[in-house]
Figure 1 (spheres, helix red, strand yellow):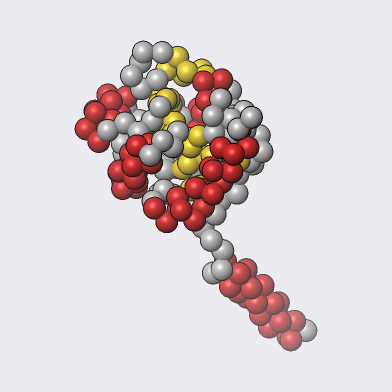
Figure 2 (cartoon, helix red, strand yellow; figure 1 turned 90 degrees about the vertical axis):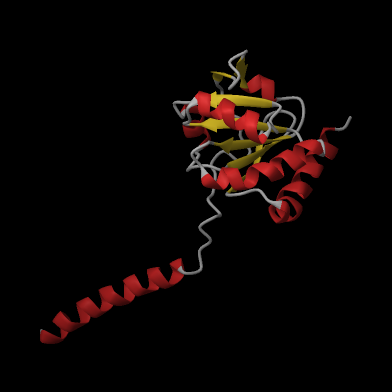
Length: 178
């Protein structure tokens, strides 16, 4: 009977150790998204400039990156200059200003330049919730029909663009050609 008293804690310890060991090899930046292969969620939100109401239909027509960003996000400030470079190279980028003060967002875009062809104001975070956003920055790749094809969590920089996003983006551009 006394042997079982010693075996049970040992078995529990070994089980926990196996799960912790497995966790060492997980990649925390690879968060799966249930939205891959699904249409961009329906929404009707103002632009950050307040000059129009945008819907998911406005995102259709061309493959694009949809970048979730905020002024309170230090990583967004790091990636923003590279997004400006991509936009200058002709990459279509739309922004979702996530859970942010709109005046701060307008000031940010005026000061750091606006790489977004459309910039959606998501002050309440409802669109971000529908997208399954964990935080900012997150970037979705959508096709010309508005179907989400890929999700990247974290900063988009030259390496991420070259190794992950550019080949997928180009594939969607080629796919959209008549």
